[in-house]
Image (cartoon, rainbow over all chains, first blue to last red):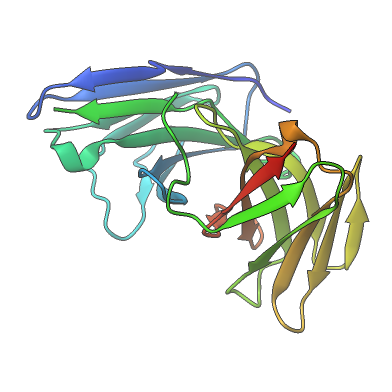
Length: 114
Length: 111
C-alpha cells in the first residue's frame, strides 16, 4: 500500500487564521480524500481531491472554508480557513491505489484552535 | 496523544478471549467493506476487507463476516491481546466512491 506523509502532525492556531495541511504520497494514486474526525467521533468525509480540477465537496463543507488543491497524482493540500474553536479536530488524508482496494490513511493533523 | 473515541461504545474483553465487534451498515448497494483499527494519536490502520460476493474472510487472528440480508458486518479477533486495545471502525463503499465510516467501537483488553 501507499505510504503517506501528512504535515503538520499537530498545530495550535489562533482563531481567525488559516492552516494548510499537506499530504504527500510515495506513489501515484488514483483517488485522494480529506476527512475530519471531531473529538470522540468517527470520520466524516470533507471532499474528494480531484487532480487538476476543483474538489468535490460533501454536504456541509464548502470551498471557501476548506479550499483543496491537488496539482498532481501524489500531492494534495487542505486549508482550514478563518478558523474557530469548532474547527478543532483531526484532519486525515486518505488515498486509493490503482486497484481501488485498500484505502490508506495518513497519521492525521491534530488541530486545536484557541 | 489526543484521545480518539471518548464517547464511543466500549467492549471490554479479557486477554486471551475472543472479541467480536459488530457494525450495521446503511447502504444495501455497498459492495466493499473494510475494518480499521485506530490507536490514540494515529490514523486508521487497515485490518481486513471483504467484498460483497463473499460472506467470510480470514486473516491473521482476524475474521470478517458479512451478512448482506441484514446489512451486518462483524470483526472477530482471536486470542485478544493488550495490543489490540484501540477504536475499531467499519467502513463501506460502492464502486469508486469514498468510504463511509460507521460510528466505531472502543475495544479495551483487560490483562
